[in-house]
Amino acid sequence: MCHHRGVDGVRRAPYRLIVAASFLALALALTALGRSGAFHTDHDGPSAGATTDLGELWTVPPVEVAAILVAAIVYALRVRGSDLVPGWRRACFAGGILVLLVAVASPLAGISQQGLLSAHMLQHTLIGALAPLLLLLGLPRALVESRLGPAARRRLARLIHPVPAFVLWAAATIVWLLPDVHHAVLESNALWVLQQASFLALGLLLWAPVLEPVPAPHWFGTGWKAGYMTGVFMVGLIVANVYWFSGTAFYDSHAAAAEAWGLAPLEDQANSGTVMMLMHCLLAFGATGVLFFRQAREGQLRQRLIEAGIDPTRVERALRAGTAESLAEAHGIPVRTRAGID
Image 1 (cartoon, helix red, strand yellow):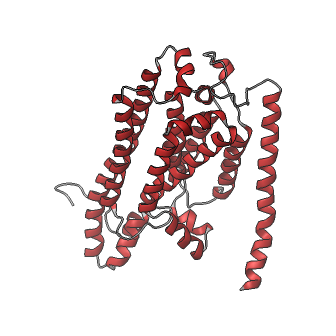
Image 2 (tube, rainbow, N blue to C red; image 1 turned 90 degrees about the vertical axis):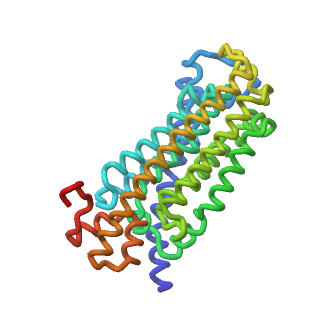
Image 3 (cartoon, rainbow, N blue to C red; image 1 turned 60 degrees about the vertical axis):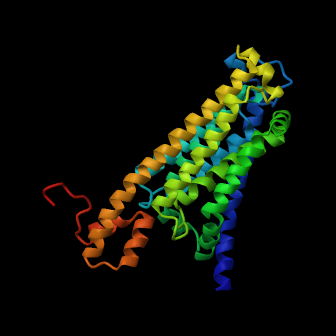
């Protein structure tokens, strides 16, 4: 057994080295591209003169872009020739990569770095909410289980428990929105990258118990997931209401950029609340609606499978793993019914 692990580790080492070398090469190439004048890569922060010229606001941050592209390449290599990942899931992962690139390598990133709060909030929600959803939709449980051993799956399952996942996400969201923290992020390139990385990581953590690339706790069924997403909506609603009705502009660092775009600082702050509210409404209520119809469909399918004599424990596992329809088809059980006929 020890010998097997040693051999497996040796086999994986070249692959890891290739990934590391690819990341380094991409980062160096993008840095050289930025210095050649093709794209802006420096982090000016709020002290720089704000501009509304979109041509000057294009940005290609080498570390972030290299990490995103390497992740896309690794995923493509992993799923190539695999029948575990259908085309729609691959399209979702590609969409997540595209969203990340738009968020960090476009005029949106440049506007955010200069301090326009509503643009920064849009970037925040793209990286921390929409992109993680799409990326995880591209990682079905069958693929994750085929790549991880039992011990790794158990550790990952403990990590994505819904209670700490929600608490960590909510706490980090509030901390990053504190005015002093926001100012420090705009002044420091290292904090800027850390903030973006934490948005993505905590977004993945937030969505993981809902999408279950590894099994969530047994009690966290469809009804609990709907309540969980309602909690996500409530966090966005609370922040948006503070921004809308406070009557005070909290972020002095964002004033110059707001004025450059013809906005009062308080108006920019209210717009950022609207951005957060719209994104949270779209994702939370969209997910809740899908979960509601899924619960109704699961109830009918559960009854059919159990009535066909399949062990209830096996049925529950299949429903949670999203393989219940395949189980029904394998036993010749109709997946959907037609009113008045079946």
